[in-house]
Image 1 (tube, each protein chain N blue to C red):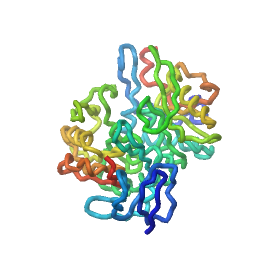
Image 2: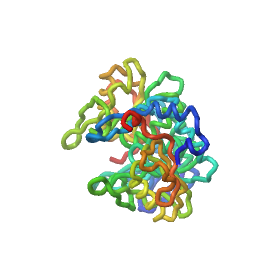
Image 3: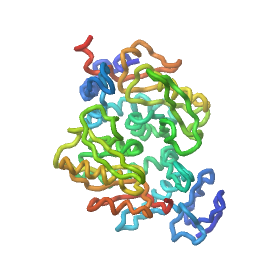
Image 4: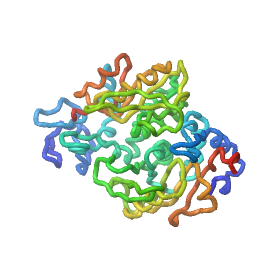
Length: 230
Length: 191
């Protein structure tokens, strides 16, 4: 195990044999974070129950860029666009989800606008499911049903086309990241209202300090990467 | 050019794709016959055909970047990028991308909008295709081409599922080839 100081002067702990790129703001750890490291330690994770050490996950985690103070001061934004530039990491991300959901009777992959639109369709195509976009208000052209959810200040709505899904279908809901869980909880409610069972919510990244998992009720959550950034 | 003019004439996949697209009249405003691709995404076979046609076309063209225009370009671009081993680069509305961006403005019917890209997304000399669900005036795609060229990348082609009549016969957009699978559905009754 070695310690090195990243280009931002924060110490990290790494077992990884590949050299993380220092052009990105990344901290990557397989172990308990050192007491000196701050904010965003990216830790590998699988599900809550198993500590999955899938060998593809370190590369996925290290391909995610953290942008401080976006969209506002104090927020460490998890930027997956750099994961999308890493063809191997992006392929591995999709492969992990596909391996998990193929052959499980999932007929619907619902993706939350807009970054859920990037991960959802490749999964849907590979497992033989429909892709259903869940969108901000007024984007979908046909008749919609909508579900409101709380923001820090005020509320927002998520919408889905009437007839996109049928009662009895089994769905997974995809987004790039779960933070407070408000959007995913609204997506779950929306699908359940029309008689769909949500087998699982799946995100690339979880910010557990925001306790989003608690908002999902009985619905399981599957995550590839956990970050302590909030 | 339309796929049917370029070796796919009579390909039954094109008919399936066209049939899967729903027309929603008077959206977002009166007089517009909106081409709704969400029904294509619900038809797994037709969606797969769509991606397969683009992948077959681009897989041997040394394309290293697939750029997709927000938001419907995000649904078609990534599956193509993954299949041909290219990077996926999202082109977004202002204020969405968290890192340092470059932006290009383009005309709307009334006023203009901007398209943004991360500065480190593409490198000089990379070969790029730009994807969107539909091309109408070509304004958005032209802005996307400008973004790529400002970084020294080469746009090999622009590709869309649907092309409005304005582009028929127009094989190039800002000097770049344009490849389109189908014409809009549901026009026959109005022509």
